[in-house]
Image (cartoon, rainbow over all chains, first blue to last red; front, side):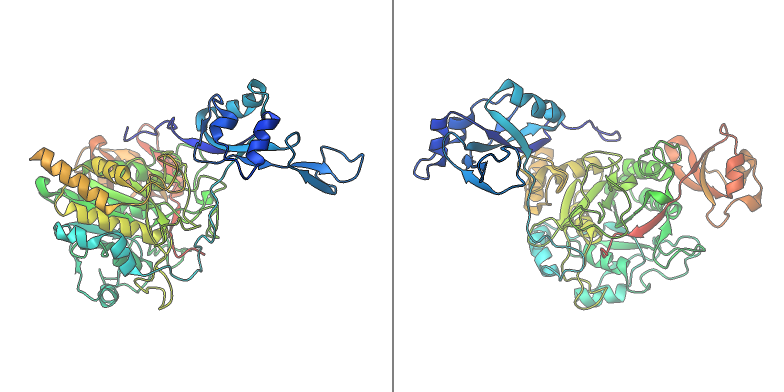
Length: 466
Length: 77
C-alpha cells in the first residue's frame, strides 16, 4: 500500500548452494563426465528449498591430509583432494525464502542427514563500472536503449510537461550546445532559495546542467523548471551543498506550480539527484526530529503531500553501492535514506549502457520503504560534458534525470487525471526488465526501465479506457 | 537555525506563526518565511533560532527537526 512501509515481501529469496552427500553411486554418477546427472537425481524434495533444475550438480572433492595422521578437519596443512565416490560430495543450487532463511539453514542438516551444509550463492559480476572509470557509451546509446524514436512516434516527447530539476542550477546554453537543439526553460516558474541570486538557466555549468541535459534525452520538448536548491549561501557551507529546509521550501513552491495547472491536464515531474550522505547531520534514529528513518519529518511529509497532489517525484538512490561506494558515504548500512527511500517516490538505481549495475549504485533495503531502489536507469555515459570533455554523466545523479525524462515523455499524453503518480510508478515497476532470478531484488529493484513494455501497456490501457 | 512546524489556518502568515509559537521576529528566519508543508493538515514550517526552538510549547508547534546538509549524488568520488 502506498504511504506506508510495506512488509518484507514473501517472495524475496536468497540464492543458496547446498552441499549434499548422497549415496556413493549417485556421487559417482555426478563425478563421471560421461553421465549427466540432474538435480532431481541428487536432491529431490528438500523442504523449504526451491531447487534450480537448470543447474547441473557438481561433484566437490574431499580434502584429505597429505601426510598420514593429519588432522581431517584442518585446511591449514598440505592436502590432496579425493573425488572417489566414498569421499566426494555434491553441490546443487536453489533458493530459500528470506523470511525463513535462518530456520531453514539451521534445520536442513538435521532434517536430512545427506545435507552437509548450506552456503550463500552471491551474484558475482566482473568489472563493474565505478567512479573514475571512462564513459560506457554515449547519450545516443541511451537514446537508443530508451527507444526514444518509438516514444516520439507515439507523440510522447514531453511537450507541455513541466519538469523541475532541483540541483545546482542549469546552464541552458551549455545544454543546448551539447544536445544540438534548443530547449524550453520556464523562468517564471523557476525559483531560487533565499539568498541565491543567479538567474534561471544562467548558472555555472555543473551538476545541475548535467541533470538537465539528461532529462532531455527522452523528453526533448519538456519545459524545464530550474530550482538551484543545492546553491547554499549559508555560513560554513560549501559551494555545492544545501540544507534540507531549502528543499522543503522548493517543494512548497512546486505545489503552487502544480495547483496552477488545469486539473485535467496536470503534470509535474520532479528530478532530485541529491541526498544526505551522513547520519552525522541528522538526529539519531528514533528521535522525533530524525530525517533518515522518520516519515513524519517535514520534508518527508511535503514529499507525500505533493505526490498526493499529482507530482511524479524521482530521487537518485545514491552512490553508496557496496562495490565502489563514494568516499562521502557514512551510513554504516542501508544508505537509501529519507525521501530517497520514500514509498511515494521512484528511487532510481544506475546501470551502464551495457545493462550492468554500476558498482556505486546504492542497494536496498531503503529506510522508509524496504523495497528500494524501485527501478534502474542509465548512467555513466558520455553526455553533457558538464565535467569536461572526457568525463561521463555519472552517479545515480544521471540515472535519475534519465528516468525523469522517460516519465515526462509518458506524461505528454497521460496526465495525472488519466494515470495517477502511483499508477505510473506501478507501470514502470511492472514493465521493468527484471535482472534478478525472480522479481524484485535490492540491487536492481524491479529492473531496468523498459520503454517498449511501457508503450505496450499504455496501448492496452488506452483501448480499455476507450 | 532549526526547522520547526506549526498548525495554522489556511493562508496563514509568518506573523501569525510567530504569535502562535510565542516568538519574536528576530528569532525567526524571515528570508525563509512560512512554508506550507501539508495543506491537508494546515501544517507549516519555518526556521527559528536554536534557543527559540527549545522554548516552543509542544502544544503549539512541532520539532525541532533535523535540517541535514544535502549534496549532489555525483560524480562519485
